[in-house]
Image (cartoon, rainbow, N blue to C red; front, side):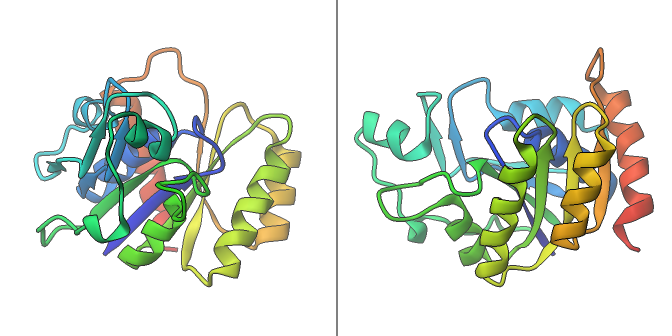
Length: 203
């Protein structure tokens, strides 16, 4: 099974969620498009402790920390959906998108088009900030319009029961995990959240 981790914005918490999911499921990790450094693959590799997870190389490793379409143009590279082929693995695969779900890969295709091409189940990550309700509902409406299968939602940030409850009410999504701010993000924190995620994952 493949899971595509997408968010409502660039800093939603996709990489941390991906690391937690890899730890919980002992899954492989793949970031198809990386723009800027340090890479998310490096972060996940440092946070996962199980011996089964393999981090697969990026299809596009871009230098500029920018939207993939802009970073690729800066290097004279053209990104096409046909460039992406799932890594050769029999393991569960966690795929992390770049930026929010509607971030452009090129002049025509968006990150969510890649998730659709790969036929992966979606995990939506929503960081909680003023305006996040609107951004989350808009993101979910696009996923629903495309008839994509969404496993559930992960909330990231200070607890905000009002925001979380209204998002759940309007989307009907299941909350898979609530990630709170941590003073020190390390392997122990990821392992703790992985245990919490597993309790909700198979409900």
